[in-house]
Image (cartoon, rainbow, N blue to C red; front, top):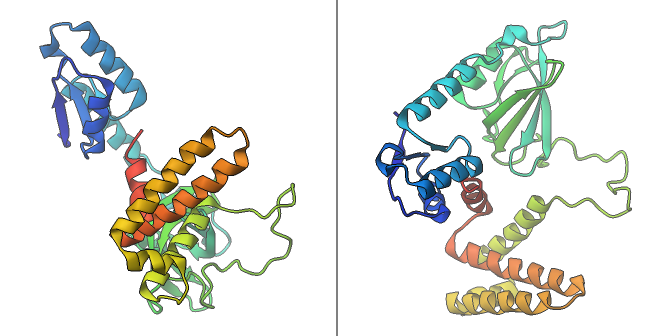
Amino acid sequence: MSDYVLFNKYDAVFDDVKHLLYEGNKYVVFDVEGCNGNTSFLDLLKYSKERFPGKVFGSEIELDEYLKSASEEATAELEFKDFKLNSDGLIPCIAQDYRTGEVLMMAYMNEESYKKTLETGLMTYWTRSRQRLWTKGEESGHFQKMISLTIDCDKDTILAKVDQTGPACHTGNPTCFFTPLTSETDAAGSDNKDIYKVLQDVYSVIADRKINPREGSYTNYLFDKGIDKILKKVGEESTEIVIAAKNPDPKEIKYEIADFLYHAMVLMVERGVTWEEIAEELANRE
């Protein structure tokens, strides 16, 4: 049986269920047999199952059946022989940063490299120029940890979501796709901005300021003053958001939220918290 917690707090509310899952329990099993038909408890079970499908169950038997079904679906995955290959027996694989969604590179796989990728968890390709297997990063150290593999509708291209170490391109660029052929503006004429990339870029600058201080830098001023000053600014900026929210003009609240996020990132760097950890925490919630 997988790790779960038996829930028998019969006067519970939905927050009690959420907290159990947020604390790291993979599954919550309601003690229906012991509730003696408690209507509120059964209603909470129904609502919790709707809000957390695949996480909340009415019995151990129900959880076992769910896990068995999930296991059967996993074993029914496509095999390499089911893919549509080119004349050389290869299939193109597009590597994408799992955090930002940025396309990093394209390479080819044969059956051997595909199986090695699954076995090792590191993206392994078939290099046509050298005619051999090639684990990305084996020479540069810029490995790609496999997060997931997905086949397209025609089964002739693989999308790999990866955790990239260092730059993906041999030129030192973060991605192999760095030469623009058209303008990167949307239909409205404004630059496209990926929210995660913007936040990560600002975070990286703040982290660099802490390691490499610059004279006159406001960020370094905050670090020099210490945690109490940083906390004070975070508190002040959160209050500014509340005040700005009373103003019907959206410009002010956008400015204040951006200001708050900046100071929150200074606090994150000071305490060693990363956006990856924040994203993981949020992903574990509903």
